[in-house]
Length: 109
Image (tube, rainbow, N blue to C red; front, side, top):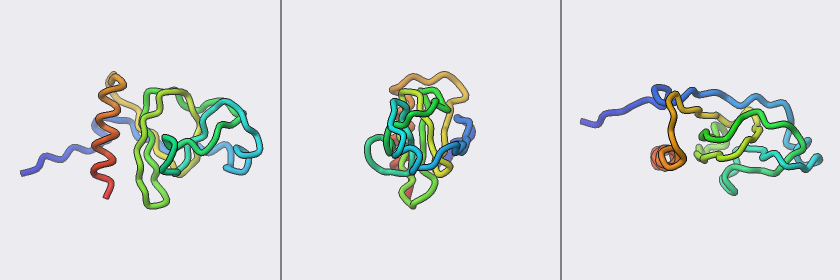
C-alpha cells in the first residue's frame, strides 16, 4: 500500500499575488526575478524593476498551462497569479527543498 502525503501538510500553499502583468515586466527591466509558468530558466520569465513579493527559500509550481513544473527559488522574486508558492512549515535547507522539487516534478502527471 502506498502512503500519500499532501503537500499542504509540509508547506503553506499560496497563489502568487499579481501586482504586475507580463507586459509591464518586459517593459520595465530590473533586478527582481519575475516567475511565470515557463518551463525554462527556473521559471524566470525576465527580471523586472519591481520590489520582490517573496523571499527565497521556497518552491514555486506553475498551476496553469498544463506543465505543473516545480522550481526552487533561492532568491527574492515576484510572480503572477498562475504560480503557487510553497513555503515550508518547518525549516528546510536547500537540499531538502530541491528533493521536494524533484518529487513534485516526478508526480506532476
